[in-house]
Amino acid sequence: MTGAGMFEFTDAGRILAGIALLSIVTIEVGGWFLTKIVRGAVPMTPFQQAFARAGHAHAGVLVTLGLVGILYADLARLDGLVGWLSRSCVLAAAILMSGGFFAASAGKDRHRPNAAIALVWVGALSLATGVVSLGAGVLAS
Image (cartoon, rainbow, N blue to C red; front, side):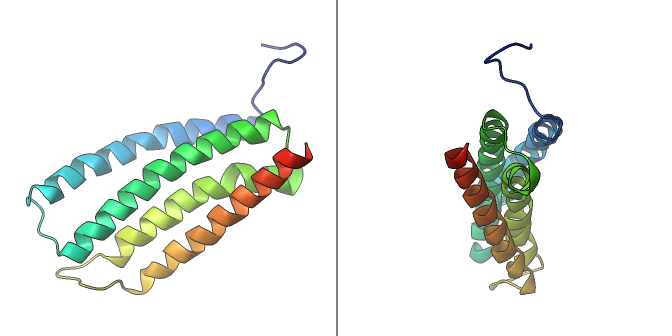
C-alpha cells in the first residue's frame, strides 16, 4: 500500500521482522524442552533449571520487543546508524542474552555459571544500545 500517511516497512525492517517472526518457532521448541525439564525428564541442577527459564524468558520477551522496535523505527523513518542500531540491537540482545544463559549453564551437574555468562552482559549492552537509539530517534523524529 502506498499513499500519504500509509505505513511501509523499510527493506531492513521487513527482513529483520520476517527473520524474527520465523525465530519464534525456536522459542516454541525451547518451551517444549522446558516442560521436559520441569517434569524431571531432563536431569538438571536447580541452577541449570533457573538459567534455562531465564534464557527462554529473555528470548521470548526480547524478540517481541525487537519486533515492536522495528515498527517504531520504521514509523519514525529512522535511517543511518540510529536506524540500524534501533532495528537490530534488541534482536541481537535476544540472541546474546538467552544464548548466554544457556551456554553459561551447560555441562553435567553445573552449579555456577561458566565464562559464557559474559554473553549475558554483552547482550545487556546491546539491549541498552538498541532501546536508547530507538527512544532518542523516535523523540527526535
